[in-house]
Length: 487
Ligand SMILES: CC(=O)N[C@H]1[C@@H](OP(=O)(O)OP(=O)(O)OC[C@H]2O[C@@H](n3ccc(=O)[nH]c3=O)[C@H](O)[C@@H]2O)O[C@H](CO)[C@@H](O)[C@@H]1O[C@H](C)C(=O)N[C@@H](C)C(=O)N[C@H](CCC(=O)O)C(=O)O
Ligand SMILES: Nc1ncnc2c1ncn2[C@@H]1O[C@H](COP(=O)(O)OP(=O)(O)OP(=O)(O)O)[C@@H](O)[C@H]1O
Ligand SMILES: N[C@H](CCC[C@H](N)C(=O)O)C(=O)O
Ligand SMILES: [Mg+2]
Image (cartoon, rainbow, N blue to C red; front, top):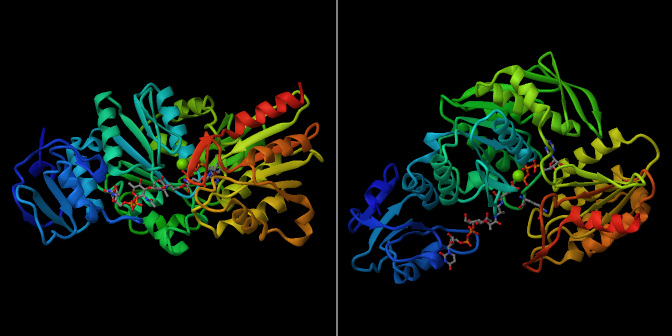
């Protein structure tokens, strides 16, 4: 059992009613999970207000309540603590509860619109290959050295983060690489963590449903760097015009990387083909299995991070040549009659453009490039016509379909995507709401040497329609259909 008073260390407390010298079992922010001797943290959410569930939490056994305002009616024997921000308080308490685990390993955060999973996962792989015990918190999976756990968010809530970091401490993990999403920063899921480094990949259109404007989205990302401590490093992609902004107010040591401009870490693409990328990084050549110029940025940031964390240049280059593709990121297979099918998680306009441009760069002749793509429901709707425009401009044929419609009407989402298609491209497009049917049609349309891109869902193994999830795996489905068609 832990003592509430200790867990409150560093929390900005505004008022207290009751005893803080209490033995507590757990910290909980969902009243439905409260058990005897728990502390319930009431948080104002996007759908509900946790303060409405204080009564339910006490009924379920909560002995202390953390809230924005102590209620008028208080229950005898229950401790109430008023804080200025419930999410920040939760994050600091979570860290205290689990023994401040981020202090006991080197935690590196990766933020940006695209590339977070790729960079964090490749860093995990590289440090594992270098012989260290490593942790990973990513969209695709959570890894405590070799043990895998299911990921539910890109950046989970602060209790979950700290509980995994504690596990990592227990296993003797030295380095942990984690994705830091804009939702994560904004909802203070990463508050109170001690980062030794922060990486900025890039910034483009996304999540404009959640953040009111692009400037607000950018400033939330910037906040992550503003809060890095002096002894941390801040590594930014300076080819992105927002790179400089990220560094503006940080106290951390600043480093830059770029392909196009002067920077501390520079790379040049020597070769870019379906078999990999040949890069020149600071005068040394390195061949990697990763594909696409956007991956040159990811690889360069990995090189720089490994060097900033003390690995030797030659060792880093050697290990980079052994890195494997990240699941659902430009994953591909080639059939006997040479149809290449690529599954990629491009779910933003910029990512889709990069992937299509990469494929067009490595296409050799007059093969068709058939794209299957949709947009998620209950997410930023302004990206829909943009993605429709990009897909139809950069492909030979496009099938618009459903991504995860969630609670929206799939047909309405597709109509919004179609609005971005320019008249000269109308004839290239068709729309099939059922994603499996859309993939099947693309496979039937493809002939020898053609390329199929299935974008948006990457590693996901489900599809969410009407709030219900069913098994769905782009890669498996396409493989099965093509194997049957071309036995
Ligand atoms: C919009 C959003 O980000 N929501 C997150 C937020 O939930 P919320 O604010 O909506 O919570 P709520 O349902 O309104 O409830 C408010 C509070 O009341 C409590 N409650 C509620 C009901 C009840 O009966 N009792 C009770 O105590 C809830 O536990 C909560 O503490 O806080 C929850 C706990 O941390 C998150 O799980 C939840 O993520 C939802 C599921 C989600 O889909 N988030 C996505 C958008 C997200 O975070 N994505 C980013 C990645 C984006 C990217 O970069 O691509 C991510 O990091 O994963
Ligand atoms: N450095 C990059 N620049 C632009 N696009 C990229 C970059 N890296 C990856 N992508 C594209 O973005 C897609 C998503 O990549 P990744 O999963 O690494 O990003 P993410 O930032 O983790 O996304 P999410 O916000 O969903 O967690 C990839 O499938 C690829 O198409
Ligand atoms: N992290 C992103 C993933 C989007 C993936 C796409 N397949 C979708 O479901 O919209 C989000 O939650 O917005
Ligand atoms: Mg990710």
